[in-house]
Image (cartoon, rainbow, N blue to C red):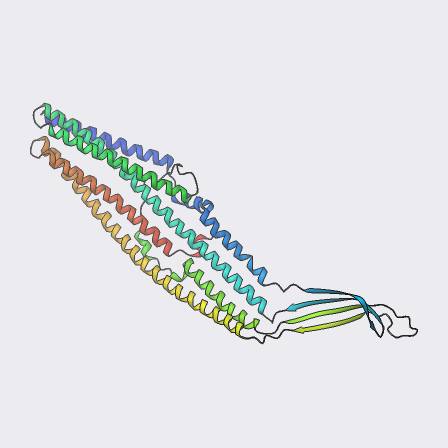
Length: 425
């Protein structure tokens, strides 16, 4: 009878411990929890590597007005020390102005090539931002799993306290040996060490997370109480050609095609239009027609690109660079497809394991209740109770790990199918 009363008290206290722990966790998370989107926005605004990538894009935009401008005109001024005599007077000074014009369409081709290269830099920036978001989501899932695991370990300590009270009561009643109490002490010491290690790991992950947001490493991170993953992510029918990293290669390839056009047009003559103006002084001659009239002479200049080797080399260089980018893009597409297959497998595996550990947890809870009842009635040994209690804890932790793995795989798939319009803001 005494053993049954002790069991009832133990079960009541255990239930209170669990309810209080759950209520405390829910209450704190309701107050403190922050959505992952908040941290993604912080990272987009503050991450220095991302800001650097965007600055590179803005710098690339400045290339277009440079290459699409006409060459600077030339102005030549000549003043004669000894005056050159002409029929209508002496030349006092001479001014020559010349503006060169590239072959038709050259400037537009240069502008197009520069714009395409700048757009490539923008897609590279988007890809870097998407990769950063994936890192943040992964770290967020890691912290979530650590929080949940630490909570489970702390609850386990309270459960072991209840076990300890039960075994002490049974020892005093001569129904159990003192070694059971020692076994609980060993288990509690092991749990305390594990909790300390988990907290140190959490501190490291939190520091890395805060550094991604470019803020103090000690800044508090508020994690949602419940996070789920969806296997519907694998049904995404997006095209990998829309991936920013792939788009960046497409823009570079188009830019090199424009550079081939530029090289061909630069192998054509440049046309120069100018004006020559000479100041003529009057001669002391009567009735001289045009006496002292300044001379104005329009000029036309034409370059002669007769050395063809450099133009052919420039065309070949742009052609080879285009082929290189095309091959690199094909390789990237293969990597993305391979990465997707791995992430899809991880996501499906996480779902199956989550369902498995959910079933095992329920079965372990029923088995533990039966063992506790048998232990109270001296049917089962305390080692069996401890082992089943450990099994239950392991299943609960594995369930959390499955959630983390699923969240990480889902985040990876989101990255793989990211598009320009998904991050337009």
